[in-house]
Length: 212
Image (cartoon, rainbow, N blue to C red; front, side, top):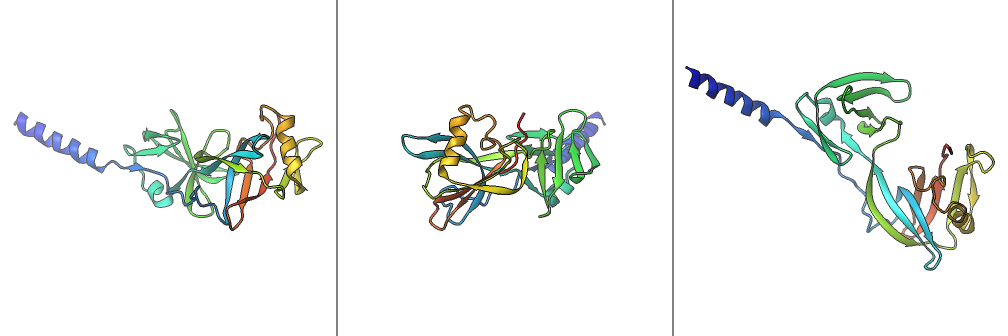
């Protein structure tokens, strides 16, 4: 009888283990080797005077399929921010900024998710920033006709209603004035790059950055 109970328990354990799922993020549809007619979030980390090039890191927000997230159960796991996290609890909350939130492991090592306007879930950190994935690090020529659209107020570092249209020299000046590039707003998550039909860098946009 004891042997039969052990066999039944073993089968139940195997069944429970087999039913656990690991959710992974959606595939990234950006090819860093083919950036023709493409617009992407970037970090512009350096300007190299000797080669007249810029170092660019292409970044993408981590996203998950809504059905995968909605069907999660305790005992499943999620691969997020470069690691697999076992799900011990699932909590639903409401945020005035994000709306409905799903919080995994709220009281231990929380993973925060909200549904975006494309019906995917995005992960956010506790400082309200997305979880960003690094797609590629590139060194690219900086064209003379590059357009630099600057959304940061030069007087106080605040937000502008409309960006200031600047040129290549203005962009280079950002790096020369800030050698460590700590406050440029180009090395965090506030820059966007546009590439033309031949894959040449044509526009860099800097959004508002709350300078400290």
